[in-house]
Length: 269
Ligand SMILES: Nc1ncnc2c1ncn2[C@@H]1O[C@H](COP(=O)(O)OP(=O)(O)OP(=O)(O)O)[C@@H](O)[C@H]1O
Image (tube, rainbow, N blue to C red; front, side):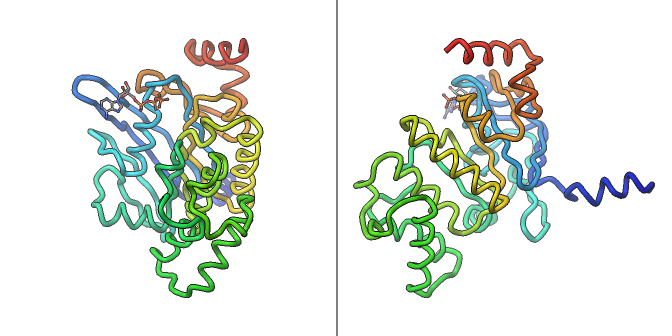
């Protein structure tokens, strides 16, 4: 190996966090995703954009093991350096990764929270699921995370149903991040929020990526959100990836006619 190749190998992470090849999902004769292939690297924010029905949510579901794929592979390399194929792995392994290494932030925070227990319990529960037992320490960690997502610690014993939509979304993020995941799947995390709440939430996600080196796979139909957060973008149409690359490159100089249309229709708004 020559010196340049060796230096390049030292600088780039040994293995991608996710290596996806030919991923496929059909519902009857309808194609939800087909021939989806890409790599995602540790610490990266990867955006998936495309119009409604293009297969974004289905792809996220397959990658997090919640939707069964019909074909292809999705190799995830865990903290210990072991690689798992999410498509074929067993339920016990999927649950372990969901508990210890992944976060899943749903568009509707009610899908990701337990509404019948307090805000503190929502944040403390994932810690207990990973073995924490000391009540005082769990409460302290929960308080710390409520602070990080700008929820007043005085609300720790309140039920999430008494929170606003933006607060619920921030609570859902705290519940997902308290275990220190390596990869967070986010499906339209700012959808349905008003503009100022949305801006603060985007800042928070960006800070967490920068401060904690968190990798984020984020689905959005909003190109402004993609521009703000994503290092790289994948553009989906009718279940296929039609273009992928650096965010600025894709948005400033789109190559595929569909991406050109997507970008120009946003600019006209
Ligand atoms: N459970 C299901 N049964 C049948 N068809 C489905 C199911 N889930 C998704 N589909 C279809 O698969 C395709 C992709 O849907 P998907 O929800 O992944 O798109 P999307 O890009 O996330 O859309 P949106 O932005 O509206 O959420 C669509 O044609 C959809 O109708």
